[in-house]
Amino acid sequence: MTNSSLTRIAVLLLTALTLAPALHASTNDGTRIQLNALPSYVDRVFVPVVPRTENTLQIATLAAENVIAAPKGFDVRVRNGVIVAYSDGGDAAGYAKVRMGGREVTLTLVTVVPYQSMQNGTLDGYRVGEYNAVPLKGLAQYERPKGFIRLSDVNDDLWVSNRYRMRDFQCKLDGSTKYLIVRTDALVKLEILQHELETMHGLRFDKFTIMSGYRTPYYNSKIGNETSYSRHLYGDAMDIYIDQNRDGKMDDVNRDGRIDTADARFLLRVAEKIDESDEWSWLKGGAGVYHANAAHGPYIHVDARGYVARWGATEEPASGTRGSRAVAARR
Image (cartoon, rainbow, N blue to C red; front, side):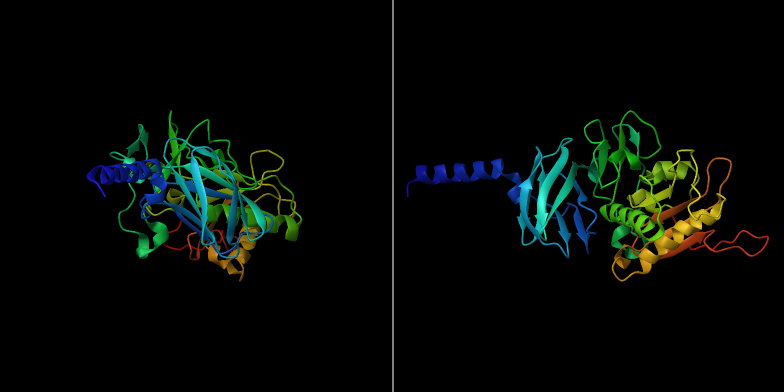
């Protein structure tokens, strides 16, 4: 073989690598979403995609079979029953259709801005703050996030689960540009909780009102929270209540003719049954009950941190008292 032939082969190989970066991207920095199951009544799964690296979705009970369609800006494939997604960057976002375990599932794909893009705790002038370098108790769910979703006109209206849109979880910290994190397992748990309330308790409502979803570390500190390990910082915590009549406060969900902390405890008991169930205990997490005050009505906090924690007014009070039960490292 001549030198010129070898040169041509080298050029062709270099061109192939340049044109197909997704095939050769690093597999260390992408998102790894692993779900033990997906409820039959949930057909939409959120997949944040770190650009220029491999991102995967695996559902233990639903092996991926094939990709039906993928949105512009994404390369979506199936490998050994796992969904593999790539993006070259930018603000690419959209819906992919795949078959998994004989079901058609919609994947909401959104490109994230890598954590390493943050400078001095800010992204595009938006105050994020810093995450702890050392995970709480060494747990993976407390590792620094892979990246942040830039909220934009392209993606804020996207459905991230059957009932919720991206904008429902945004931080209350204002800015011309906003960033957030949403975790897929928390979205699944939220859908299960609503399904249980509807099917087992006869409650009919469009969706939970989310008082607080994602919080940046900066905003969490600004509003007076001392813990730097709040699950709100990691995108799987939600402060919620039911407000189907749109009056700005909790509905009488336990049907006792009053709107008070007992309604929040009613929601808590249903959430606890999910945490304790054989089928969904892998979604277990923290939960807290909060009394009404001048600023808001009663509500509950739920998350999917991976271990049980309880705090606030979770117990029925003795006569003349306001019952509470606290757990360290809450919220």
